[in-house]
Structures are given as structure tokens and as C-alpha cells.
Length: 163
Image (tube, rainbow, N blue to C red; front, side, top):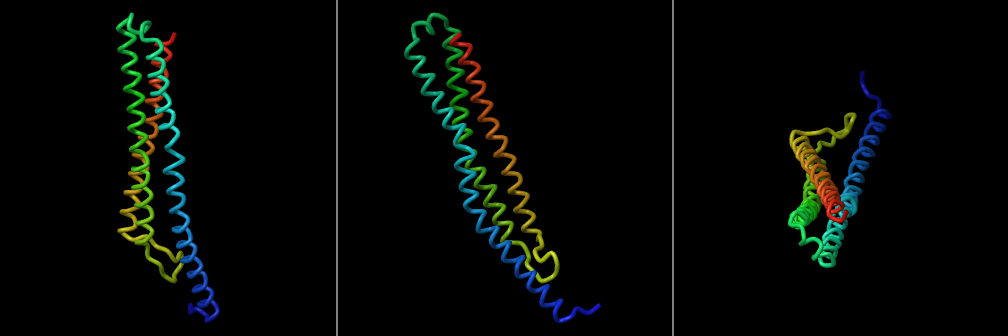
């Protein structure tokens, strides 16, 4: 069935709206990348850094009591290990999140825009970059959970030493 002039104009208008909406999505993505990278991952780092400071302060104030039992010193070293591991994960996580988001943004640049519904189509390259973004996203999630687990382990060990 042939398309009327009005239907053709409507389809072109819808396609142009769809293309503009996709470009607007890309413009909104960049600030979101920055917000997630900063806000989403600074809490474990701040907690671990504060934990290191608190643990070292506790160690200084209670050295005599801690050194009386060598097991306490071993546990204290484990506390510092877990806190520093958490800090390391917290430093790595924003980089992985950045790679994830930049992969998503790159995948959008390889999408094909046309004037047939749905107006924006994936290509082999866009799908490849989207998969890379998914992989980095899951790595980032694992790293952040690892950072939180390290803080939890250090907190548990710290409670064992102080009690």
C-alpha cells in the first residue's frame, strides 16, 4: 500500500524527533557518568580511609594492651589489610565505571539512524560496544561489593580486638 504525502511527512517528522531524542539522551549521559563515578563510589573509600585513621589511632592509644597478646597484633594487621584492600577497590571502581559508560556512549555513536520505524537501529559495532559496557558494569559492581565486603571484614575484626 502506497504511503500518502501526509503519512510520509508524519513518518519523517517522527523519525527526526526520534533522532533528536537519542542525541538528547547522549547529551544527558555525560553528566550522569560523572555523577555515578563520583557519588556512587566515594562512600566506601571515605569509610575505609576513616577506618584506617581510626584503627591507627586506636593502635597508638592501646599499644601496650595490644602488644601483650601477639594474636591481637596479627588481627590488627589483618584489619589494616582489609581496609587498604577496600581503598584499592574504591580507587579501581570509578575507572571501571568510566570504561563502562564510555563504551555505552560509543555504542550509541555507531547506531544507524533511518526513516523507517523504530528509526534507530543497532549495528554490529554498537552491539559490540554495548556488550563491552555491560562487562565493565558487572566488573564495577563486583569491585564495589568487594570494597564493601572488605570494610565489613575489617569492622568485624576490629570489634574482636576491642572487645
